[in-house]
Amino acid sequence: MSAAADALPFRRHEPALGPSMGLSVVMHVVLIAVLFFGVRIQSTPPAQVMVELWDPPPPPPPAPVVEVKPPPPPPVVKPEPEPEVKKPEIVLPEKPKPKPKPEAKKPEPKPEPKPKPAPPKRDLAFEKQLREQAMAEQKALDDQRRRLDEQRKERELKDLIARQQVDARNKALATWTDRIRARIRGNIILPQDVPGNPEAIFDVALLPSGDVLSVRKRKSSGNAAYDDAVERAILRSSPLPLPDDRTLFQRQLELRFRPQDR
Image 1 (cartoon, rainbow, N blue to C red):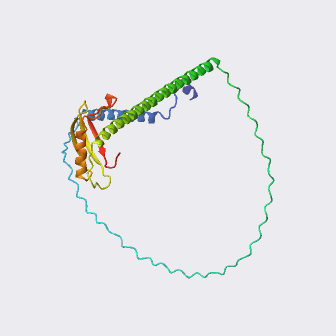
Image 2 (image 1 turned 180 degrees about the vertical axis):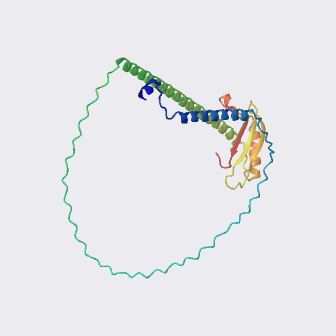
Image 3 (image 1 turned 30 degrees about the vertical axis):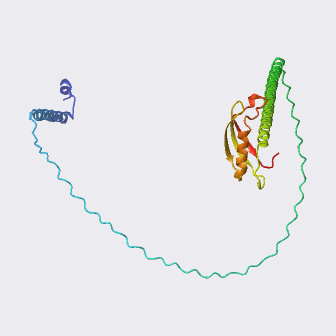
């Protein structure tokens, strides 16, 4: 027996060969089925879907909002305050305040002397220019005052001469008028019973030769007889005396007469 066994070829014993073979066959079958059904699914045409679109219905109107007012709160009744009972005030005597101690005065600090600024440098040329300008202005003022004084004196002299001339002319006219009135008074025949010393004024027009051109009574003395006597005397005295200075001659003269004039 042992010799026959040793003569047969050696065989390996595999106990799990059968189940593994069966599992392999099952997996191949499943794989083939998956491929088959997958190809069928991809080759089928897609189904068409019809969809109809409609507008949505309008929303319903909002319901009216009714405000509900809360009922008014009940009136609050304030409790009446209890009458205060005043406690008697006890006045305690005030303690005397301690007298403040006199504070020692601190010595005031002495101000430090400020350094004096250095005097500015003098500009001699500028000072000389200022002096010359001031002298020129003073000279101009003096000249202006002198001219004003001269003009004032000249005006005063002219006014004095003019017044003197007017006075001399008035005096010469008065002298000429007095000579005329003296001649006319010599020819007046006074009427009797002339009361008082009334004045009569006459305007007399003269020619350059002294002849009387006209006589006009400006103011009556109140006595017609005396007025007529004076007018006749003026006409009777023509020609009247002429002034010594012929430049003083006037064609119109105002002559005044009173009965008691001499």
